[in-house]
Image (cartoon, rainbow, N blue to C red):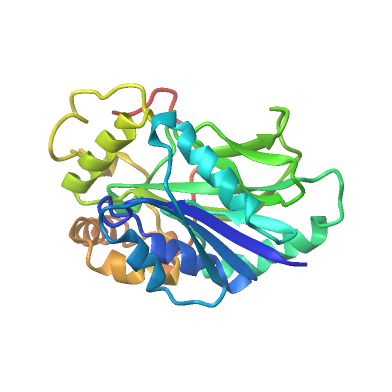
Length: 281
């Protein structure tokens, strides 16, 4: 069994994507890793080259930004077309896997490799928000999604590359796994977050900007209204977490408030199943 990893990236430095950490988090179980690097103006290509791993193959592309949000799925599908593995593990540049999940993910791939009823593996999600120790589970934040597909030519990325479906548009035959995607796309400096949101709007990723999103610095608001993440993070992220001031301040507040909680003592990876009916703004 051969496993291909892949991602697409453009202007990762400008918008603060932890692409190096995302790539390194999955390399241990990949036989190759294809990176589609779009034309960037901020040193992204040099950043990717600095990883210096023999498994990595860089493909430089000029992305068609006039395609709107579909440019993301178009470039993802191109990256997948360069993969040679039996399975393709696709993680976006702000999506990181925990090292303790990697052996289990590989076992699932082995188990379903020759099962014609299964074309994909579905992961659980933790959408971190504002702090590395808070996450979103309210309406509008999906909590499960496919990130591993069989490389059989039947599966395609669609829309803004948030998920996969069959070539004919029907849903994939996927298996739910207990493994997590750690999504860090909403843990940024407020100025970078504001810039990132405006860029997403410019390419059609989001339909409109509210008044909060038009400001030069994004306001995460009172983080205490969101659930606490008590678990550990992927080891590749520790250096970024350690220098994120808001997260460090938030963690001290969490420790003072939940000092009695066994989830804190043992750093248990727990995610509440409670959903909020209305999206919190």
